[in-house]
Image (tube, helix red, strand yellow):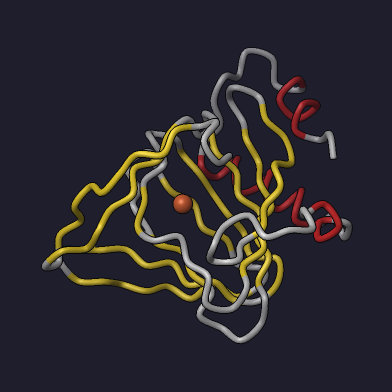
Length: 166
Ligand SMILES: [Fe+2]
């Protein structure tokens, strides 16, 4: 899949994408029926998720992720990147902590979500069916901080850098 470079090149002078633009690009890739075939044969993490980077420039990065039932990311930020994702198959649940309480949002296939640079969330497949989603970030993800939820507050638990696992 080589669409991201033409998308970026078609917008000379544009060096970042809005969250809404990212969702549109994610949906463009999500329409590709060959997406599942791009996933690696082995599972990438102990939770059973598999992923494949669809494209990367400094300003735009796209992933397809497969989520078996029960898989979740835990709470994390995106290192200051804006982002968007769309569910291709199954149902994902996005959780946020607002004033000490967890708020869940169910996202069935076809639904999408945009977020800004300070967004912290947990994304999980709480359903019985393996889910598939496409994620877009601008600028590309260089680091993510993971958080523990302690007494209703998000406490930084570790930082993951680009190159370690993605
Ligand atoms: Fe995320």
